[in-house]
Image (cartoon, rainbow, N blue to C red):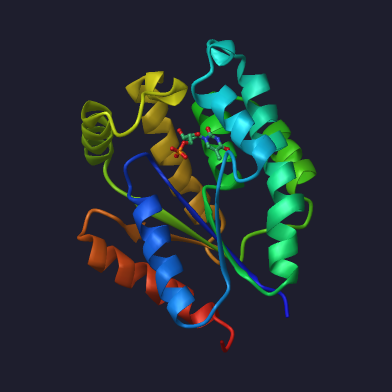
Length: 214
Ligand code: TMP
C-alpha cells in the first residue's frame, strides 16, 4: 500500500515544526509508521546544502538562480533517498516545507521566472506530489514578532532569509494565498494564530479523512 505525503507550508513563525511534532506523535500512537523530514535538508547531502543556503559564508550574496537550484538539488535527493522509499513502504511522510516554498520564495519572493521555477521543480520531484498541503497562516506582524523573539532568545541564529526586507515577506504571504486559490483540492489554509491545541485540531480535521486504516 502506498503511503501518504503531507507537507506543511507557511511563513516563518507560523508554528509548523510544533504542529508536525504533535501530528507525528498522534499518528505514531495510532500505530502508523511516520517519517518526518524538512526542506531544505532531510538527507546528509541536503543538510549540507541547507547550511550553504542559510548560514555558510560562501552562500553570502548568492544569486537567486543558484538558490533555486540548490533548493531543488536538496529536494531531488530527499525525494529519491527518503520520500519515495518511505511512501513505497506505506509510511506517512510529514514534510516541513516542500516545493510550494520554492514557487513562493524563489518565484514570487526573489522574482525568478515562474515557468522556469516550475520546470526546475518538476525535474526535481518527478511524479512525487503531496496528497495534502497545509498552509499555516499568521498575519505578517505576528510572523515578524515571533521571528524576532526567536532570534532575540538566541534559540536560532539569523540566516540569509532573515535579511530579506519586509516587501519580500509581503510577496511571500500573497503568493501562498495565490497558491491556495490555484490548488484548492490539495492545499488548505490553517489559521495558526490560535492556541497550539486549536491549530492541532484544525490540522487533524484535514489529515484524518485521508488516513488508511492502521
Ligand atoms: P526553515 O526550515 O527554518 O523554515 O528555513 C528554511 C528557509 O528556506 C525559509 O526561510 C524558507 C526558505 N526556503 C526557500 O526559500 N525555498 C524553498 O524551497 C524552501 C524549502 C525553503
